[in-house]
Length: 312
Ligand code: SAM
Image (tube, rainbow, N blue to C red; front, side, top):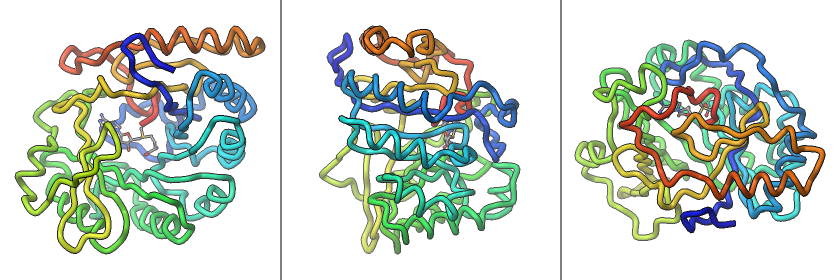
């Protein structure tokens, strides 16, 4: 369906938990281990049914860390079986992906995004608080073997923290058909609010002049590049320096059953009160989608939520 600004909203991100097995410095973690209200797989699937009735076609399961939920495959399978839902994707830190890749594919997962901010063990440990880089790399291998249609690595660079490793991350797209995407640090949490730490997409293009922009750009959010001899692509996602709000197609279902129409604002709207009345639920979702804000102004400090609560 279209929102009040004529944007087609067909993409739902579903945060299935706020819990995470990492403690990343930019995420606003403090409460990551606390088990807050978490919807059952059945309730999540029922809510996504209602979103599908409102025109949602693509779903991304996220968190917190979605793979800390033992029933994540049930969620993927249930969502994939909903009429109108064409693809189910997942965003994960990859720590548990080695064991989950095959069952997730069997459950109907189409693609996976893996967050990896450094290929250097000690930098990775500094960023995430955990010594698990090897497990993540094995998870990336497992995902390739298990034939997911697309594997994307998402990295957030911070000056003086992990930006020196950008070239090593880019190299991951050389020999494997993996897309490596750099997401600009957004102003969530105290680290994110440090504008001096942000590495913009344009800075990366100056630093890696061998990257050539691809003619076909299939998404509204990422600008894609290639280089000679590369099997994968390099993507630049620049929500701060190159806003794409006018092409935004997404809304978010949080793990407490509320809907967040825009990542940059704290506003979220409860759905659980409507869950036993499908007609009222659908009407409420339509209202919320219609009222999605035109866009963000990250400069204005509009949100206080870290991404562990909202889902990446
Ligand atoms: N646990 C999953 C993961 O690691 O992919 C899903 C959720 S996690 C919040 C998703 C991603 O959000 C992080 O890995 C990071 O790439 C991104 N993220 C978190 N805080 C961010 C910030 N301030 N700016 C930009 N990206 C951020």
